[in-house]
Image (cartoon, rainbow, N blue to C red):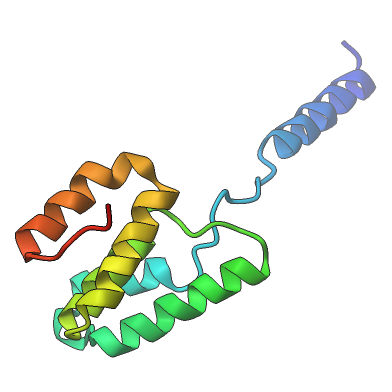
Length: 122
């Protein structure tokens, strides 16, 4: 192989690696959800439910404006925050949305509702 051919082969390999590593668009709009979860577990005293509700609601609105879906668990988390705030009707509503979007979560969510003494929508 001549030096020119070797150089061309190296450039082609590098380009093919770059194309193969191109990022794909996420299936979900994560917004502030990941940092919120991180802060909740690393700084538990600073995870005020009202602030979390505000951030999760904003993430949902931004996802809707971009015609994207929120990630699994976001509505369940929102439901837990509503329950902590003492608003069981909004908590159940959020849990039901989680089940609607992610049917595989139904058994888990129904178990949470049962243990919390909340009624699931039938």
